[in-house]
Length: 262
Image 1 (cartoon, helix red, strand yellow):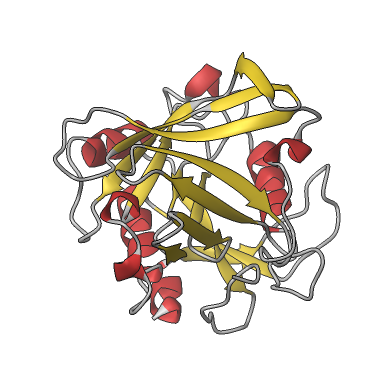
Image 2 (cartoon, rainbow, N blue to C red; image 1 turned 30 degrees about the vertical axis):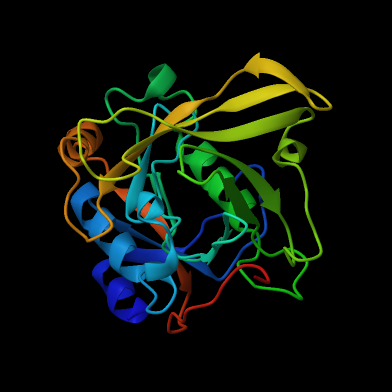
């Protein structure tokens, strides 16, 4: 259960205030080593009747390799797959994202975006109040649209109910953006082991400027086994630096809530 996974985290506490977000919250974060966090996130986001419908390419735990922003792991297997449309709707829920509690030795750009103020602020902006609709300050959601062979897709950000509300992820930065998933060659036979997370900026529908792209790299397979060599590469990269994830709310048992209507 989610509560069992929550109890595996250490040093659980309310998300702290930052120089940007100065209001207190009951949202809770918990910490774990790289190995433990991968395992916790995987098992916390297995939903019988839902996960097995998600394409194999998208199951498992991903490392946001070479992402210059201070965030490391993400899970998108806890979402609703629409086969005919090739669409995956993914709510921002607990245990689906993990941030570094420190700066790995080889962090992108020298770890300039990995300071505690930056990572915690980024997490709190992404998660909002942590409460689902009708709360207007709840976390956002993502939708992915893929072609038939899962080799190319685009993603879109949403707030509130995804059936009624669609926003461009570019609203987080004052430009319009195109956000892609482009399947790459891999050293592993696991489907979907590496996707280029293309990030393209511009004006309107013209987005010729690539900035911020990274490689979405699967470190745990859809069956729960380490996806080598990427699993070991990530563990070595993190070293002794812990990760933290949203683990629910302080003093409340964790339940399977979703961040938006989908």
